[in-house]
Image 1 (cartoon, helix red, strand yellow):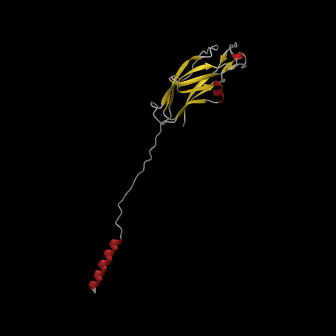
Image 2: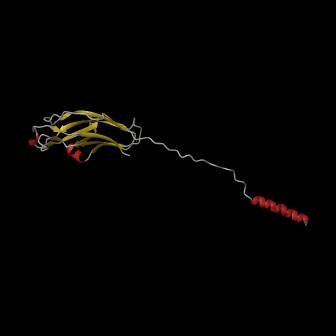
Image 3: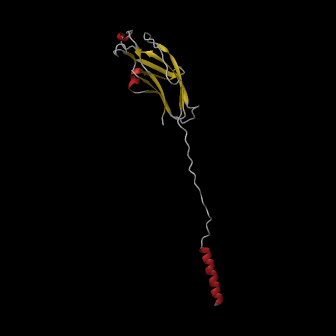
Length: 175
């Protein structure tokens, strides 16, 4: 009987050991949250302000301006006109001669846009949209544009006075 009890004890101890899960290995971790940022950067050449003398008797090409632009994020290039045309300030604004700005890649007619000054007065008109997320050195372009006066009726042509407008070229990041 003692032998039977010993055998039962050995079997029950063995069964208990088999039913006990193995000890889990000790494990710890440390999570590090990483973050960083790069500010949006856009460059327009030329930038600032300048002046241009418009020949008010010439409805044709008034010359050209080439701009270079680039951003390290999506962007737009837009045009806006303060007066919606060449406003005759001497007449108190009775005469306002609108003009067209034609812009294309290097003046070659590639991806050309034509925008009228009257359309640019209420809100800027976008002439370039770029949705790429790229380095500033690879995410740019160029536009060459010229200005053509648009005499809507013969009464506007050669009216005496001083004329002015401000044409603004804006490069803006889209994020």
